[in-house]
Picture (tube, rainbow, N blue to C red):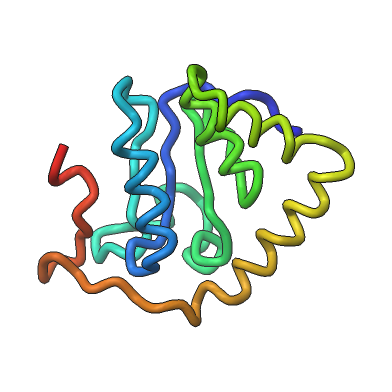
Length: 139
């Protein structure tokens, strides 16, 4: 397992994906300490070159980058996000479970399966013509 992230962390997600947006909106609403910086990779102004990661890699799986520049992908990205909520028993338990030697490969397999079908999921309607989603607008 990668080291614990240094906060704040940047959470990169596909704002056009209904499932992805809903999940990240949930985390964003719970983040009262400013530990998460939400970045919509489907927004017109998103430039993946800034991070040295191709857009195809961002689109393939969730990415999180911490304050030191460490990159967490897929299951490790979710674990990093959950660590932003140290008072949450549920996220702590989930992070511990996906770290277990027998469950970690299963979690990775499930995430890989989701990543393969994600592009076929319904797309989110945009809230404005610029392509930004509503994250942070109701905060």
